[in-house]
Length: 93
Image: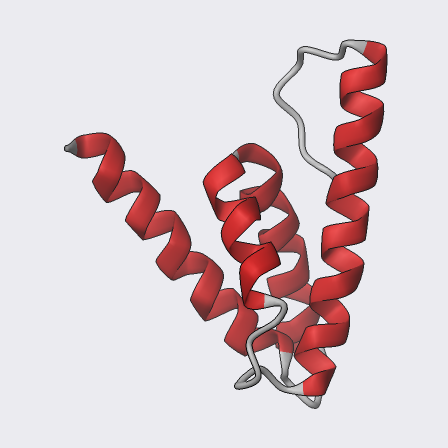
């Protein structure tokens, strides 16, 4: 049960951060992008959810463009992480 609650909390955090990506002034968007990379690099469920949300029509184009870049960075990091067998708990940056 605790695992389910933690997963739902992660997904809710992803939703909040996605909404901040659309910030026109950029201050919140930059911080949200960093937090999304951290959260989604450490949680497979959060990363899967982020990929699914990238196709949500309710998300602004600005936020969607950020999502595509974040997803690409995490995928690249995951490929390198697996190829070199890195085991330290790190995140894509």
